Every structure is written in structure tokens, then in C-alpha cells.
Length: 392
Image (cartoon, helix red, strand yellow):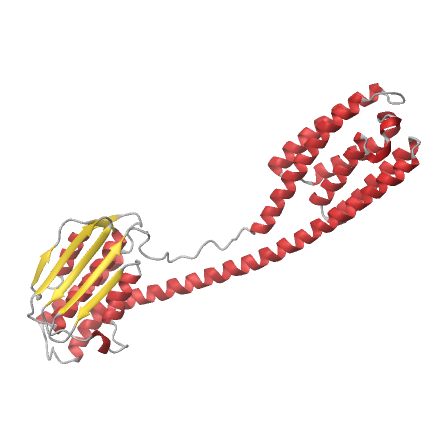
């Protein structure tokens, strides 16, 4: 699991999912419809070639339309439906409709069941689904007029009127359905983009707050602790110990800054990091039990600094008391325990403005989804338990 939330926002560009889904569906479906209609129409067209059908015209026409259907399907599937496909589709269909007298046998023309009737319906539906309304509706009307003209020329005015009405209904229904879906999906994408922007803004604000809290923890454990000591009159004049402590604070802040530049996938020995913490508190005698333990570097850093805050509290509030530092790791769970036999305190009475326990220990551990327990009472010493698990 990551140690800290990333301090950068997601990319500013957001792909609108609804529009993408619409484009995907209304590209693949027209491709399949054109391919299916093209292959079925080819079989049906060649099955009935009674006069006045001109076989020498029918066979080339079927060959061209079949090849077009295959190419249309492949092109639409991989590249989408553009203007050239729409124009070619409408032009070939109009030409076939006008040639009904020489391409369709009179006995199969009635009932809107001829292969050119199926071709015209497929073209009308595909055009409404793939082109803007300002182009698709005129294209649907053009195919309707061409079919009515061809059927009329073939001597079947009833078929001309009947399938023309069907084509008009298909044009209107498909155009309305497509328009409604486009509006709904555009609205969904608008809401989605707004939600993503709000999420990014919240993430940036959260990361800014976490960075500020992290900086405050570091300052509290170093510079502010030293200034507090000076302000309380512990140091009344020039002091070699104070200079050494200030130099140690500067080294600590530099080390913390360097640790945060470590790659996210880097690892670090927690036991070694805890020994470095002990070296920063030379005046505090600690009985340490630190077996080898390797963790993600950022996690080891947070646990070590939390332990440092706990040990610093022991040095400040229980000077001279026996203090122990123990590290245990088992089955993906790491536990660090700091215990002192000092005067202890009541955690419930700690003022809300006190930063040490709340942020330097509990808040720090929470930043890596860890946990800190403080067990203390007046006269019973203090035990601080730091827990982190890489499971779940």
C-alpha cells in the first residue's frame, strides 16, 4: 500500500465516458448491420433473376455492394464512421433504388421484402445513427424518394407508397432516438467532468493540508521543541549543548527532506532507521531490541519519526526513567513499542492545542494507514504502541 497520498493531482484532461460509449456502440452496430445486410442481400438478389432482371447488371451491382459492405464494416470497426462512408453508403443505395426495375424481379418486389428494400432500410438507420441530424435526415429523405421512384418505375405504386412510409418512419424514429441519446450522454459527461474536477480540487486541497501537517510535525519534533526549551528558561546563556542541538535539528530536517525524495518503490531497514533515531537522543538511555525488518522506505520513515516523537516525549517528561524500544514484525504486521517507567499521565487531560501526541505520533501513523495507541496513567509510566500492516 502507498505510504502517503500522492502530492500531485490527476491529469487535467478527462475522457467523457458516456460520449465514448456512444461512439463505440454507434460505430460497431452500423458496421455489423451493413455487413449482415450486404451478405444477406447478395444471396437474396442472386436467388431470383427472372425478367426483367438484367443478370449482366445484377451480378456487377451485387459484387460492388457486397465489396462495399465488407469495406464499410472493416473501416467503421477500426476507424469509425466518417463523411466518406456516409456519402458512399447513401450514393450506392440511391443508385440501387433507382435501378429497381432491372435489379428486382416483379414477384419479389411487393411486401417490402425485396433485397433493395432491406438495403434502403439499413442505409436509413445507419445514417441516422452515425451522422448529424442536419445531414442524416436529408439523406434519409433522399433514399426514400429514390426507393419510391424506383418502385414506381417498376410498375408497383403500392410498394412505392408502403415502403416509402416505412423509410420515413425509420428515419424519424432513429433520428429522434439518436438525438435523445446524444443529449442524455452529453449531460452525463458534463456531470462526470464536474465531479472529476471537484475530486481533483479536493485531492489537491487534501494533499496541501497533509503536506502542511507533515511539515508541522517535523518542525514540532525539532526546531519548535528546541525553541520551547529555550523559552522555558532551560538555557539561560551561551550553551554548547544548545548549539549541538540546533545543529542536530538542521541535520534531521535535511535528512527528512532527503528521505521524501526516495522513489516510492524503495525499501529501508526499519531497525537501522530506529538506531539513527536513538543517535539523535544521546542523553536518553534506551534499552533497544531491534531485529532486522525491511519496509517500504516511506513507511519506515514515518514509523521511525513517530518513534522519535515518543522517545523525545520520554526524554522531556520522564528524564532518567528506564526506557525501552522494541521492534517486532510478523506476517506482514510491524509493531514498534516505546515504554518508559516515568510518572505517566492521563491522556484524556492533554489539551487540544498540544501537538505532540495528536499529530507527531497519531497523525503521522494515520498518514500511512497505521495506528498508534497511547497507554498511560499517573504513576504507571507510559506505553506507546505503533502498528502498521501491509495486508488490506
